[in-house]
Image (cartoon, rainbow, N blue to C red; front, side, top):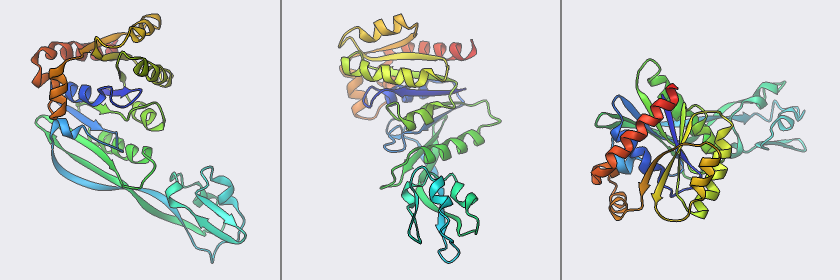
Length: 284
C-alpha cells in the first residue's frame, strides 16, 4: 500500500501528519520524503542515514563537427534545451528534461548521452521505519526527475515486500505534487480551516481528484478559522478522517522536532483511527 500525504500549500502540517502516521503504523513501513526542494521529515523521525548516492539525468552532448545544422533536435525540444543559431548548435543542460528525443532524431549522431547531477538520494532507518529522501542539488530547478529516481529506488527495493509506503509529498498542486501522488493507492489531504487554507485545499482537491484514488481529509489546527472546509467536504462527499486540535502542546512538540503522538499521547487514538480509515479506503 502506498499512501501520499499532500496539502494545497506549505505549513498546513503535512510533514507532522506523515511523521505521526509512520510512527504509529504497524511495521514494516517505509517513510519517503519526496519534498526534495526542502526535505524535513528527517527532523521528526531522526533516522540514522546509512547510505547516500547521487542522482543524475540524461542530457545531450553536442559534437559540432558532426552536426549538419538540420535543426531536427531543436524543433523537437519543447523546453528549448537545445537551439540552433545559424550553424551553431547550443545546448542548455539545466533546461533539459532528459527525454532523449533529440539524440534519437539526430541523423548524424552529433548528439550523444551525457548527464548532469540532480541531487542525492539518502536512505537509512528510524527504529522499525525504513527511511528514504531526496535532496535537490543547490541551483537545480526541476524536482520531478529526482523524485522519480527516489520512487524508482523505493519501489524496486520493496517490490516483493509487504512493507507499506508513506510518502511526504511536496506542497501545492503543481508538477512535483502530482508526481508524488501519481503512484499512490490513497491520498491524505491535509488542510487548515482558514480562508487561505480552504482556497488552496480546493485547488489541490481538483488536481488530485482526476486520479480517482481514495482520498480523505485531515483538518489540522481544528477550532480556528471558519467552516468552509467542512461545508465543501460535505457537499462533495469527501470524508474527514481526522481532526488535530489547535493546541499549544502540539506546536511545542513540532518546534523541537518531536512526533506529536509521542508528545501528546491523547492524539494516539486520533491517528489509530486515521490509519484504519486509510486502510479501509484502499481495501474497499
